[in-house]
Length: 309
Image 1 (tube, rainbow, N blue to C red):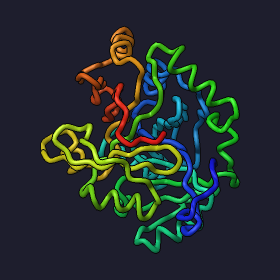
Image 2: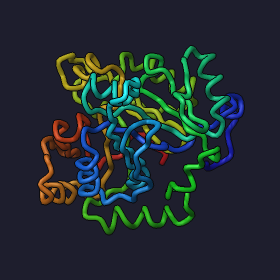
Image 3: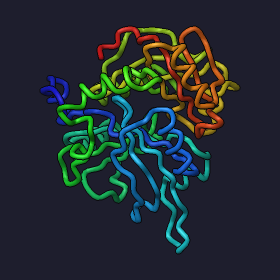
């Protein structure tokens, strides 16, 4: 899972690694697959139906991001519906959770419980920990690396050739000119409290203070695990899109922002594909969230202040 653990990781007894996957819940996996393949030409890690979870899903890798569009299904035999289906039935399509690799899920679960965070394995086979959504700023899942189901054997980002492929394929050979995931934006009730959870409980690194990428919002940026930056945002206007999401859905991921080499070139590519470009500024292009399952997919040519990646 990367470098040798530092003192803080040793004291906690676990190490958080890469983002295993981001999970957008969608009402049509076929439409979601068309979208991701059209925009990003990703590498497909997995595509299947799970009878245990009663869902169709795929896992795509886009540069350093792994994303799992999932279509949850309703049981028709009297069994209770899954939490994924209940979530989408209540809120509509949205990003449900962030899942990270962890080397010791039992140590992590004990640590979270001591910090007042309820956990469950959700009936998942293998070493999986789900944090209670009301106890964390953003819904979190953790999956054991090297455990009973060693996903890193399937995850191309662990291959020795991946970095060379990634750094050539998306920036140079794909017309989007994508370099990497810049950050995920999570709406939260309190920025300072959310930042403290990630830094003090999960050992995240705080980035330099800087303005939010969301208009009229307060924000803090943290680096979680190996290479995932979260923008923790509290909207000042409750009637803004982010404000309405916080009020109706709660603390959740609302935007995925990629860094590209040439923003004008990226915008031209998106328009050529007849994608719903709606938001434009000097340094940001956004797609219409109404047509991307209530998530903002954004592209920027700016780097975050203090980003060590």
